[in-house]
Amino acid sequence: ALVSDMQSLGQKDNIRELEVMVREYQEKWQHIGPVVREEWETLRDGFWNATRVVYDKVHEHYRARRAEHEVNLAAKQSLIDKVTALMERTAGAGAKEWKQLTEEVLELQNAWKQIGFATKKDNERIWKEFRNACNGFFDAKKAYFDSLKDQFRAAREKKQALLEEAVGLKESKEWKRTADRLKALQQQWKEAGSAGPR
Image (cartoon, rainbow, N blue to C red; front, side, top):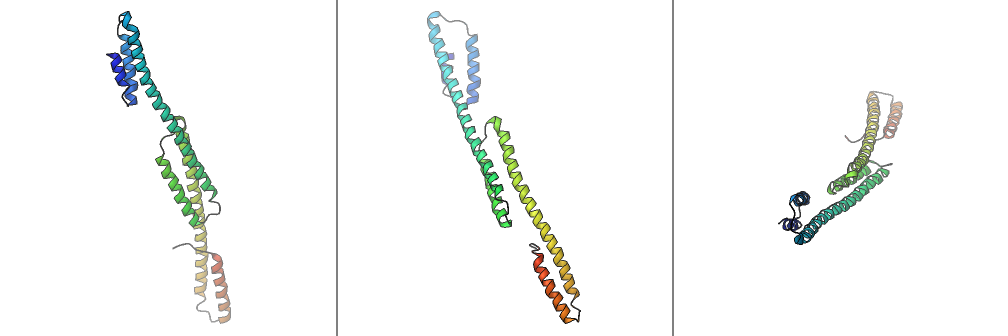
């Protein structure tokens, strides 16, 4: 009966159940008393051959999982390499380029979510590498836009001062001097640069 149970166990697909049941059946085998000498070899060979089938199935499952994890690890490493390559493209990038690069990083993050687990020993390490690469990108983006905001603020303050000076000239009756000063203010306005979007 135990040989038959072990053989039927080899037909199941639930690996956890196989692992538990094969051990249980082996324990039962050890605790069952002796049999007649003429039937011993046949029973023993039948039981251990069926046991080997179960273990082969379990081992094949784990081999396939390890192979899948290795493929996932390589795919995740490739995504890290892509984020790193994107970082190299940020040098000298303007707002439009940053928008495009951000979309690409977000796509890579979505791709990461679609990939399964890597090997157990590498999973946490590879995740930290990816997260650090993405954080590096977004930190650089924030620094760029913070710098841009500072430039806009400085330009806005300068233009506000120019505007106030121009408004102060409206009552002046010294036409030539006022006209020359307004032209100079216009030039300074252009040189002040963009004050950014409102």
